[in-house]
Image (cartoon, rainbow, N blue to C red):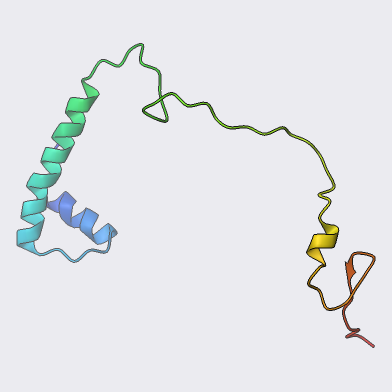
Length: 95
């Protein structure tokens, strides 16, 4: 796949980047070399290679899935100006 001047201008317009004629011509060569490198990567034989998320084998840290009520009600209302039975007390605003 190769990129021409028209494609570079279209991509620049879509990216909302102002590109002059000289810059577009320079980008054509750069983008073609990048795409050439990507095509080389496609030629590498990766059969039998498992996908990985890290360069070293790591096991995901997991915690037990336990349902609790949180036991945090007292901590949550600790700084409230007025509370009653772990509920916030607020002034009445509707008559």
